[in-house]
Image 1 (cartoon, helix red, strand yellow):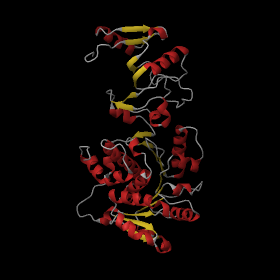
Image 2 (tube, rainbow, N blue to C red):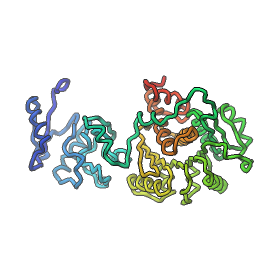
Image 3 (tube, rainbow, N blue to C red):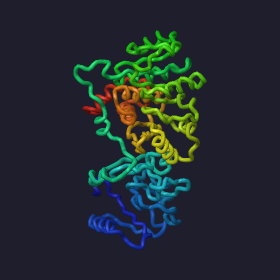
Image 4 (spheres, rainbow, N blue to C red):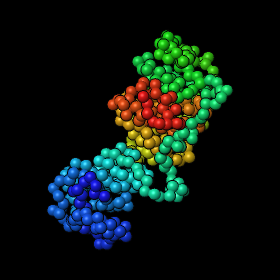
Length: 427
């Protein structure tokens, strides 16, 4: 156990009246290993500095305010440690109450979660508690875990690969759907082009960009596979031929934009609303559409549904609204939440800070719309689209400090192939 480090010490905070069975067993094991054990009755029993602290004082069941002893000890550890690793949860973290306004527990650099992540760690507020987390198996029965009722589901590779449709022999472009992307305002053409290119790279059989006729040559040069339709002749367009429609990337917030969004909401085509398509809606009724996905970031969500004090409060609003109105809400975050009409919340496990650039949401819109066009249900398309979007960026972040939306889009198809077969390395 001590191989590679000769200076390990175990500090036991003498604050509890009785020892648990597990504590007694582990203490007995430590004593046989000849590791120094120090019993701490006050702050003065701790060293002035620590190289690495493994924090395992308080568990996930702790849900009350810290007393002065613990608060002082944890403050000292936070201020005097080079690196802190917490076991399951940082000591003092109210992981089940989501209340950290007056948090005075351990702030870990890394938390090692048992078996599953804590829901709290997927919320931005958790950064006050831990910089990062990893999940490890401790041998709990997977069948038992899966049998426990829950509204929250952690998305992994196996779940997504099972959703992805295969490209079958004798199939053709008509087998993979037809995507329509509404063009943005003249100053934001790139957003709709990114969404269109993402739809192509995600495997839509055909993709049409609805834009001004004067923009046709530029769109064709940017992406020769892209078809175009004249937005000036909107009334002549046969919407029935489109398998799924995306509107919002770079749309603008004019009254005309609002009219276009309301018109699409009356159709029955699978529909993805993003960005300005959400901004122009204000508090319009979104219920009644059978195949609707909306993809707001925090500010867009709050403009639609009102201000929220915390991310947990925002998540609960999204969960309730999706269920009440029969739509899928993709609430974008480091760990994006996909809220379904069935009251379930799928938490995306892929993605990284290298993606923090304008246009990344436009790519996600194209990904989800293409999967809708290929026949996935709205919640399936949202789950798979978010995972693949982040998975592609994770692969690229191994070699790039910044993963631009264009770079990500160019590698979507390769990432899907790797996701299905492995190994996971984009060269």
